Every structure is written in C-alpha cells, then in structure tokens.
Length: 248
Ligand SMILES: C[S@@+](CC[C@H](N)C(=O)[O-])C[C@H]1O[C@@H](n2cnc3c(N)ncnc32)[C@H](O)[C@@H]1O
Image (cartoon, rainbow, N blue to C red):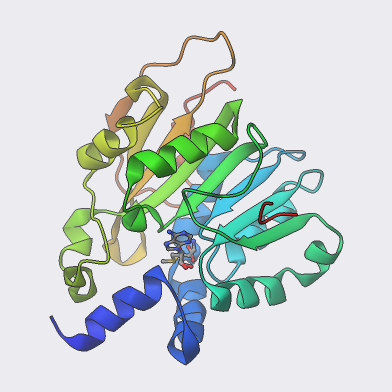
C-alpha cells in the first residue's frame, strides 16, 4: 500500500492539520450524492430532533436544519478540524441554538436517552471499530418510532480503492451490512438494506433501521436489490414504514 493511500484513509477517519482541512473540502464534494440519498431515505419531519453521526464538514447538518426548522440538530465528530469547518458552515443556526455540534465519539454521544427522532450516518460505519457499542448507543438515544439512515459505499468498489487497504476502513457488501447491523439491539426485521447506484456507477448501500414504537411489532426486513437509484428519482418508493456531556 502506498503511504499516500494510508494517509488519505487516516484523514477520512480523523481529519487533522492542513491535510484534514483539504479532506474536509473534498468530502463536501464527493459525499454530496450519498448525503442526498441518505437524507431522502431518512424522511425528516419539520419538528424532528436529529443526530448526525460524524458530521465532517457540516453539509449534512446544514441540510437537516433546513428540513427540520422546528427541531434541534445535534452532531458529533471526533475531529476538531471538522468541528471548525461545520461550525463555520452552520454559525447562525448554532448561535440560535437550533444546531448543536460537539467533539464526541460514535459510541458516547453525550445525548440523553430517547432524545432524537432521526439519526443520519453517512460514510461513517467503516470506522465503527466496535459495532455493537455504537449500535447500543444509537438505540439508547433514538426515540421509539425513530429511524436511522446510513450510507456506505459497497465493498465491490471500496476494495478496488487503494486507501482501504491501510486497515482504517471496514468494508461491507449488502448482506454483510445487514448482519453487522443486526448484531446488536436492533432486530433483523427492523433493518432494510437497499442497493443504490451513484453517478459514475459507484455502488452504494443505504441501510434503514426503523425502531418500533413502544408495544408495536416490527416490520419484516429484507435485503433489496435496486439499481440505478438517483436522489429525487426512486428512493421514495423504497420507504418501508408507514409511517456533561458534550452538549452542555
Ligand atoms: C468519511 S468522513 C464522513 C463525513 C460526513 N458524514 C460526510 O458524509 O461528508 C467520517 C467522519 O467521521 C468522523 N469519525 C471517525 N471515527 C469517529 C469516531 N469514533 N467518533 C466520532 N467521529 C468519528 C471523522 O472525524 C470524519 O469527520
């Protein structure tokens, strides 16, 4: 593996220094489409409280604040460089208290139990070194009836990209992602994994986790193969449901 690839992988997992600032600028561009897909699948309502896991340069947070003008948008990321970029991008909403960003880790968000209706997680599951701990944390903060939308690029593309060879990224095909997400507090019947093809033919996976309302029976899960999906084209059809802490 070339050293440059390892350093890129490290910057994607924990952006720091000048290279981290450049990585943040690159993420704004290359992660636009995955974010649009995952956001559409998240089905945010106007008063939802939402957590973004690994907000990076802050574009997802900005979109969430527009989608939920009556809710609070929380974000956690371990990188001070990303916190600075995301803060610059969301300054007015942060001053108004509608957006609250914190330096925190995926498995210890600092949010109270049952405090959010939606969770967005784009290009971050690669870095869940202990998936069960992260999933337990997400289950703890997500309200019953809430939804998680997660995007990863499919293993068939990731394994061709040199930077993944450095060992910083865990890679997933659809059934591996399903098994990974079901190995924790969420039942397989609450998880759906949908294949999506991005521009340039990049294969992506969107996983939705729908936490049942208290006392409700969860829906049957599936791994669905859907190709050629584009934001604002077909994802709506795939919606399956009817429906101190760092922040102090
Ligand atoms: C590839 S970037 C994705 C950023 C953003 N979601 C996007 O789509 O542009 C991954 C982000 O996760 C953050 N991250 C990685 N591991 C983390 C951890 N254990 N806890 C908190 N943040 C983490 C990194 O700092 C980085 O900003």
